[in-house]
Length: 146
Image 1: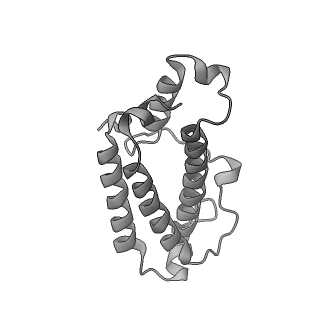
Image 2: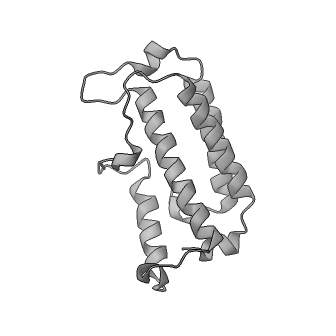
């Protein structure tokens, strides 16, 4: 599946599915279960969800700024092809089938190792909110936003 070519309706449906699957799979796990790590170099389930919630918030904040169109665009953003090309590359780089490993940016790394299970509900709520935000977008306007 090419995630870079999904329609907004497909994105919304995917986000709703992620929220449902997360709740069904992780919603009833205890703090010890969510914070278990196979070894000291790996993240726990809770740390993974904390990372996803932080990264998603950064992405939503950037999307809000771009959609408002009130800040000056950089030279790179004004180039006709560049934003679309880089955007598609970013989306494809994060697809489930990608084998390349990435290091999370500092501001999206979990700092705690004993995370409250509320992180699961926070991620679910954030994902449902993102689905609502996608539903409110105009497909043509969103496609032109960089």
